[in-house]
Amino acid sequence: SVGIFVLFIGTGKAANILLAWMREQIKSFSMGLLVAAVFVIGVVMFLIPVIPGPPVYLFGGLVICGHPDNESDAGFIQGTIVTIVVSYVLKNVTFWLQHTMFGVQMSNSLAVRQAVGVNGPTMRAVEKILSAGGLTAGKCAILCGAPDWPVSVLCGILRLNVAQCLLGCTPIITFIVPICLTGSFLLKAGRVKDAGEEDPIWDALSSLCMSLSGIIGVVLTVIFMFRIQETVEEHYEELSKPRLDFLELDWLDFKKAKIDAVMEEHSGWNSLGPAAKNYLLVGSGCHMVATFFFLYMDTYCFGTFELTSDINTFDLMEYMKPCGWIACGVFTFGCLWFFCGFKAKLGAAAKNALARAEQDLAAQEDEWKKARMAEIEAANAS
Image (cartoon, rainbow, N blue to C red; front, side, top):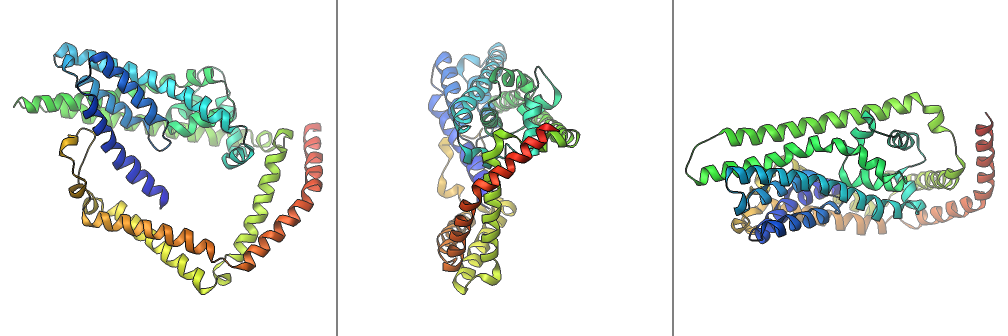
């Protein structure tokens, strides 16, 4: 439910409002300064993990094509071309930044590498696909079809060659173009309506481009999921073979599995006290209610505000309907009740069992690693 809240409210609602506000602040800039501002804003937005690429590309199309210098037909075409070029450069620059600033730095952390699962067959299959030189279907599909921030940071964590990754991002232009055109055509449709004319072609073209970008996104997702599964099946023996450079990660996985088993044993329903059960039931119930409101009663919770809307007409008290305030309040209460109360009420038995498990694992570590080294040597010998 936390993920749904972040994606639904943070990405789906707040991002549109924020970008619309930014559009209002920079609309009076000169054309050159406006392009620079769009680029900088795009970089900042891309560096936020939950912000996807499409709203940023759409924002660029609305802002650049909306500049007074681009009101003529020739200016409209010029603005659209500039938007596409800026968006493509933006994608590549932010990929490099995410790869280098975040991914490469995170690659030094065992905890991060364990959380990503770089030693597992699936992630090793992804690494195998992305390590291929040139342009391959699987490589391009992963780099262009997977979420922007996670895939670029993953490439850095895996320490993949950034130049080869950027080469694999080249087909993203096929996704960027229809998104930028969507914004341009939406703006053109608004101008036609403001002039008191009727020409539904621009709305139709905007919908067509948006649909096309959605289809491209789905196709890329299907391709990269198929290629990953195919690679795992074809090279499973190689991908599951233990490796010396994964020794510490394998130990952390073993340790985590043991600790999780202890926690599951002592945090099962029958092991919980009345207070812990209360916190768990109430907290989970609040999250379920809030999620239902967010997903299935959206129109009763929030008003309508698109990226193309005028920020000057936005009023938070009108946008947030009573059901929306209630849902957000229930969600917040559920988080506080669950995370503060349930964690504190697991009881001394669970804490003592966890401490004993930590001590046992510390005593086993050297022997386990020796046995794992023997497995690695045997695997390499064969």
